[in-house]
Image (cartoon, rainbow, N blue to C red; front, side):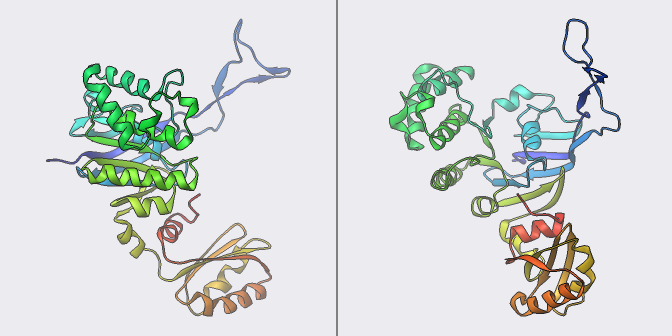
Length: 340
């Protein structure tokens, strides 16, 4: 059996966003129409994916970890046939997403970033309507829909309208909808965004249960703890590029040695960078804006010397943060910025 998901040199470039031409009295209007958009001088195309290579095995819980704008949602869009790649290839269950999008759709379930059920229907009606889209007769879809609602612990809410469901219940409904046609692969795009901590933990348990049933799950997230606790393997991506790929434990083992020390200064941190780098015990240092970042094996012992060096360089500390080796420290070391 081949990979459940495979991409090779996958690229997606969006054209430069248009701007509206403005005349001396405001936007120029086309005859009988709205202001005419035109290319912005010096505007650049947006490269959402830049040669992405991925391979996900059947039955794997795979995560795409990165900040907003990293290319995670575009990757999911390509794999679910909603976004056409600029170049490269992508296959789902061995089917090319460009050449046979219908074949791909028959084998996947998709949970969008924000719940989008039909709000005029009840929960169970949403499931029956979606099942009919896949040609599943009502005699089959009705008991299957009720079983899914029961499994996701909202079996008593089947006759409730969508507005009567909480955010967590609506997200469970989206998972049930994605599973109603029994797909091989489940895609979840930032499934816990906007949920309160209790609803998030409940959804984690549901996803673990689905994975234990042997389902292949692909999830995007920018939550470190979520990626660490749910995924068997993680791909860290930023600005459309694959930066690292391994198990969560393997990725954390690759984090720079020692604790990350981040000091916010009262001015440009670059002025104090060389002084901080010279402190014994500092293994790596960098500066961005007013923030000075360093790694040290014994952070508590090293900090006083760092602060003296910073003050001698003419800067004063405003805030100090410590982060032990983690996925976050690895991400900062790879990108030079925090995952937010």
